Amino acid sequence: MSTLTVSVEDFARSFGTTLDDISIECRDLIARIDFTYRVIEGLERDQLILTILKRIDADQQKIAADERQEIWNKGWAENLQSFVDSGFNLDSLTPKFIRPGQPIRFNGRFIMPTNPNFERDYFIVFRTWLFRKYFADVESIYDFGCGSGFNLIALAQMYPKKKLHGLDFVPSSRDLINKIAETYGWNMHGHLFNMVTPDEILRLDTGAAAFTSGSIEQLASRFEAFLQFILMNKPALCIHIEPTIELYNASNLLDYLAIKFHTKRGYSQGLLPRLQVLTAQKKIELLKAKRLFFGSLFMEGFTLIIWRPRAR
Image (cartoon, rainbow, N blue to C red; front, side, top):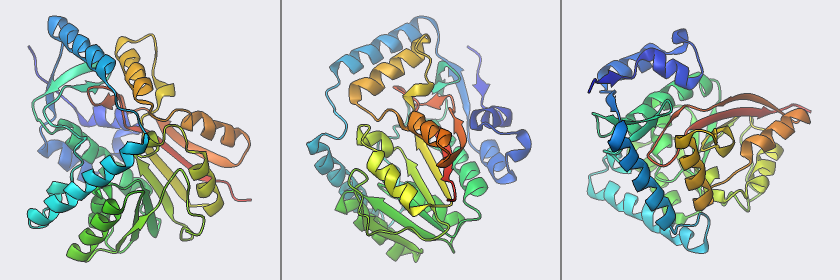
């Protein structure tokens, strides 16, 4: 079976941009990392789909259930302990939901990468392009639902002079962010913040950027209060990397599996349609909504949505 590789052109198409927009920094990453893969076909594909269907049917996890708060608190506490035990190794902070060695969704097919860390590394290329392109001109960045600080670490390394804020609804995440900042001397601050019931006392810095990555998905569609909080604070830019069920094609088998999984878990729906309504009402400008056609075994979690409030 032939081996293929993800090219610079593939990345540009995935990100919804041009070849000229893929920087030397990103090109160096693409050249250095193994992005080869084979397409999963025939009986192997059928068996994989059957496995996915059985796992969806057996899945009992419910997003935003009461017990999930303690599970997240325990999970980020484990990351904090691993960080300390490893001698403050930043690699220990890769979220555990990025699972190595699994089949990947790519361009409407299941593929098996050669590199077990293909998903993480693809995201790193995407994140490098995104952060360099869109965060260069803001002075402070608020990462809502920051978890282990995986994205804040990249931002601190790219932009050591920017003010970085990590916000999460469990204390262990806040404590982890502050420990990272203390250890590396970064301008980074952890805060306790619940996106479902935002603390309106918090005010974003003027000209700041608001960012989420896989955190609105965890709200079980209860994002309206957070959206109003953002609108009230009027950041210069809002960027979301979130699974977006509205961009799947229910007539496509792989997309249908993702819809089934997304719905069964209870991940958020309606964010993009809500932003489109706000755009029609001239309250915001929706700058980009791009499905990457890349994801994990069960769904695509990396749709890019960029918007900003309109000046009154």
